[in-house]
Image (cartoon, rainbow, N blue to C red; front, side):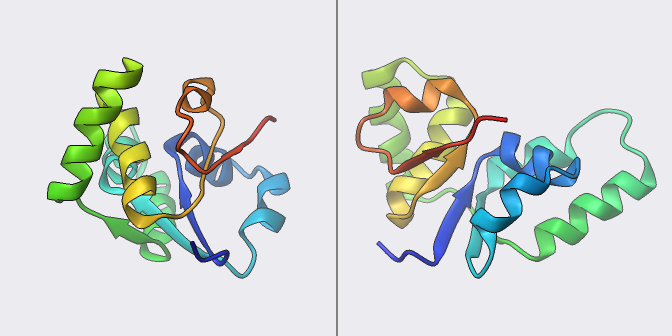
Length: 123
């Protein structure tokens, strides 16, 4: 695992876009990855203004977006079967396992997955 890489869960991206300053030190000098699920979730909100879309797209352009692949699919299936997780959460976690990098999330469900290198964020 490379200590300079981090995968961000959707809730963390939303906190950042909302101006949460306490996350910034955790992300400094890191290569930021997100799952395509986070891309879909952030841009898929109904009623986004043009300014909000631009802000999201600017942020996403600074991240490495990971699409689904056969390895992530297999991890996702195993996680869902083992931990009874929601499909989007399973895909995001599977992406972290595939990349072998830590994930930062504020979702308590992520703490159930023992093999996940989780940085649990509490506001």
